[in-house]
Structure formats: C-alpha cells, structure tokens
Amino acid sequence: MTANKRFKQRVRARSAKTGESYTAALRHFRTASGGAEVSEQRTGAISRTGTVGASVGGDGGSGNGAGGKRIRVAVAQTTLVDDPRDVAGLRAAGEQVRGLMREAAGAGARLVLFPEGAMCAPNKRLMSSVPDEVGPSDWSRFEWDVLQEELTAVARLAGELRLWTVLGAVHQLTAPNRPHNSLYVISDRGEVASRYDERLLSKTKVTYVYAPGATTVTFDVDGVRFGCLLGMEVHYPELFAAYEQQGVDCVLFGTTGAGPTEQSKSFATEARGLAAANSMWVAFAAPASLGPITPSGLLGPDGTWLARCAASTDPAVVVGDLDDGAAEVEIAVRYARPWRREARGGLYEEHRVVADPRSEARSGF
Image (cartoon, rainbow, N blue to C red):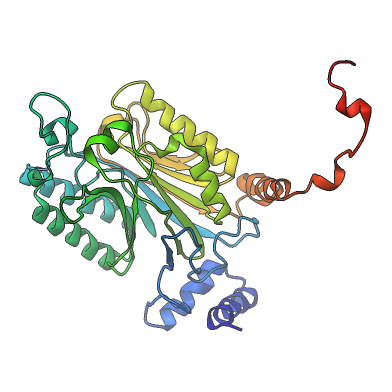
C-alpha cells in the first residue's frame, strides 16, 4: 500500500468519524502538519505529458460523481496591455492581477484563473518587423525584464495568499525560437508548478507570432483535477474530450476572444456546450473589454453559468463553487459522464445484430 493511499484512508476515516466533508478533514491534516500540503509525492502533482498526475489529498478527477470534491474557484476579467514596450503598462497589468488575486482570496477562493495575455497580449501589428503590415514578430521589442519582475511578484503573492494562480503570459524561449503563448500554473506556495502552451494557434499566431506547444497539462488541488486550454482552443472539442479521458474535473480556459464583436459570443457558447457534452466544469476567462458581450465566469457540468462577472468593461473577479455533491449537478456528474464512458468503451458490441437481412437492407421499409 502506498503512502499516498494510506494518507487518503486516514482522511476518509476522519471524515466518517466526524461527519466532516473530505475537504474539511483534509484541512485538519494540513493544519496538523503546519499548513503544508501532505502527499506521497509533491504539492499539486503535475502532468505535462498527458499522464494524469497524482492527487493532492483526494481521489482526483475520477469523473464517477462519488461526491466529496469541493473547491471554490475564482475567474477574472482584466484590462489587457497590448504594447510590450510599455513599461508602465506592464507594471499596471501586474498590479491589476495582484489586486484581483487579493479579492479572490478574500472571497475564499483556492484557485483563480486569469485570461490569455493577462500580463501582456502583444499586438501583432506593434510586434511586426514589417512596416505597416502583419509580419514576423520582433521579440526584441518586449521588455522581458519587466515582465519577469511582475511575474515574480505575482508568484510571491500567490504564496502569501495560499492561492493557486493560473494566468496568461508570453513565455520567452532561446533565440531565435519564438516564445510560447502560455498559462502559468503557480502553486499556493508561490512556485511555478507547470506551464501550459497553446497548441492549436490561429493562422496568424503560428505564422508570425508564437511557437506552438505540444502537451496537455493537468494538476490537482484538494482532490480536484484541472486541465488548461488557451486562446482559440475552445473551437476544438477533441481537446476537451482528451481532458475528460484524463479524469479532469474542470478545464481552465483563458482567451482574448475575437475582439469586441458578436463572434466573441461563440467562444462562451462553445464553452457551455463542451462543459455539458463532457460533464465537466469550465472556467472561462476573457478580457474586460469583452465584458458586455461575454463576461468571465464558471460553468457547471450541465453547461449552466454558476457564477459570472458583471457585463461591464471593468476589471473584476467572480467566485463559484465546484461541488460534485450538489443536487443540481447530480445527473451530469453521477450519471451522464459515467454512462458516456461506458458507452464509448465497447458496451454495444455484444448487442449488435450479427446477421439479419432486414438490418442490412437499407432501401426498404
């Protein structure tokens, strides 16, 4: 029996004895250990290879709807800076992120998601090395040192607040390679636990701006498994389905949308459909400029909004509870998701008609 399995049994035993939820019992053991996360391996086990990471204090994303998974998630919408040469703008973006982090922590969130490019979403025309048109980006124009300082300050605050923080930023690579468009996963100890790089980029991004990523990223917090997606990847249902197969409970999706147009509504509409189709929670973070069209928020596994920012262009953060024992998600989590897995696993083979002319003939009644 592994140490992690023994630890889980201890938490379950306390939960059964005291009547506490699994999460409340887990907090008892954290407090007893001086506030440290207790796990066989490391805090917030991470996978960047498509292999599911070990759970932190829970069974982790089984998708079986057994109950006991509960976490408060915050989702932010921010005012984006599009000029990476603007030092004051980069500083302001960092301050804005940290202010919203404090609001999220004050509302009891364990994790907060920020949009794509929350630290800076470089404008393709400002970055272009070709005058007056879109061309290969000149990344020497980016104030990388300032970005690094602001990200470091964000990580430090995440540790102080004990708040998992997932935010969009450009990740510099070794020249001449283009950078990645990324989501940093910062643990509640203030450490960069992992990083998700957008894989299915737009034509402009992949042609002129970024290098695509190559792997999924999953991580567990309080027994809840999260997966990351970015940019325009909401248009690709197979990415959500892949995370469902990895046992993800909630997909964290950050985007800049498609600009202040009706097309941006499709991002949220697709997110709703994919949440329902996969019976997963989806956190949807978009810029504040899209607030009147598609505010940021948290979707339940039936595709309904559990919490949503106001329809405003103001920076904001909203919190919602991911609770797989809630009555309103019972059908989606306890029945729909397990049934779909069973149906996709060869359930129908033994029931198929092997030979019947009336089954094979398709031209008559």
